Image 1 (cartoon, rainbow over the protein chains, first blue to last red):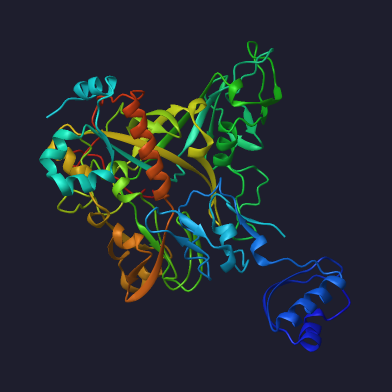
Image 2: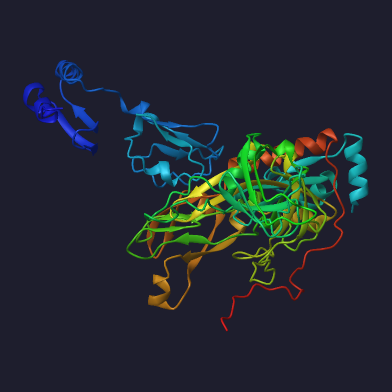
Length: 121
Length: 398
């Protein structure tokens, strides 16, 4: 990538950004987790620009997946999650995972004793 | 008053009344102790939590020519096992790690595969790699062995847990200024979280606080199969302080458990990794309590709010400041609410023990007894209780 893509998203498409995570290494694949906000039309065009520039774009909810078979619903992940995406359901004592609230910070991944939270980029 | 023989007779006829340790609470509330004790025959208790004091014994059967494992070396999937006792037997511990596992370098280590994971792999039916070296004798001439093995290939595979089913446990917090990585999980600085590990009102020994029915020889649900209480567990400590109802405040009784690993299921035996600490095994246990009299019934009606435990700082920094080890007491109802107050700070709580899985186990065991496929046993010997000499003591370095 030889373009300042985040800068262009702001300049050319008037999108506001919030970088949640970034792995940028020279001459290797990088990874950016961004929260973007702005006009719908600008957002669509901005995403289109990224795709044309060769960036693979996917929504966050696809990134962190709970392996339902491995999860034991102990709940140790619950206070670790900064956004409240993992919540104990009071009646059943099972842990619910709201992937729309997940910001893919991955704090739960290593904290889970049975490694039920999986990263799929 | 009932006897175990009478209850077994009812189980045989499909007439036994069985409830879980959760259901009995409401029954006692509605009907009172006397009526519930006469109507209900068995209460099922359960736990599903990590327990490092777990492992398994195996007998490989002998190849031709034979090998003397005892005194030699043995690895299963690169994990060292202990063969130092006979020619064909070895022991695999839940916390064992491969020789080349990076462990805590860099800190915190991930411990993604250890003895507990290997036990899970074996139970799930996966082939594993066995490598053994020995010195050769006239009767066991082979000096090395390399083979793929499966749990089916072993003559015996026996789960053996020297310590399990802790009767209550501490709440772990971190009073210091940096994150610490412990067997109670990742503890955030400045009382960032509080971790506990007990199924509380469902936990076996909390439902039989003075070990009146759970004893040596008691038949149990172990890892999805059948097991037995083999002995009182290591670090068994019945003489700790107790509430008026007899519930120990903090870690007390423990059990040694044994069972046929070949009859167990992956769902109830899970390898686990504790960041910065190590690998272990999560074990599913279900124990039936026969309601022989009203006193035993009262014990099983214990509620989360009746069970108190101590909050302990795992960083040691609170001790330096206050010369006290614990930061007060809390009950399991408060712990399960998701937050507790410590030193006037609201602290989020999390459990290492799965209450929902414990509930599932209590239901499964209830089903087995109702169907007439699981019978109760009279203990051969009682566990040491408050009137015994058994105590947990630290090691004095000489």
